[in-house]
Length: 138
Image 1 (cartoon, helix red, strand yellow):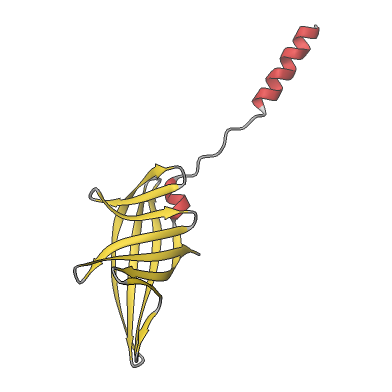
Image 2 (image 1 turned 90 degrees about the vertical axis):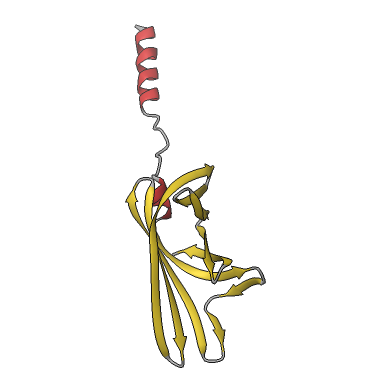
């Protein structure tokens, strides 16, 4: 009888242990981002970029397509003398956990970004120059 009570206690104790919930990669990175910095070969600049009466700002949104894919949409807003023009671009990216806590965004086997601890770095070319946007998840 004593063995039965011990066995029952072990079964109840072990069954109450829960596994850590695995959050899909897309759920971890989906959302809106504030673009805080623009980096090129000459340095890192605060966003929005301003000079004279010209301002350049960016918005970035990431939407879940599947557990391992997201739609990345970026907007560039150029304001000259109070008049704004917005250009949009986007693509579906595959998500790969390259190391614990680091998620890479891949399009056609090319890395376009990296997410880590609420920060997203988005890589692209502008006028033939490599550029990185530094973004913070809202």
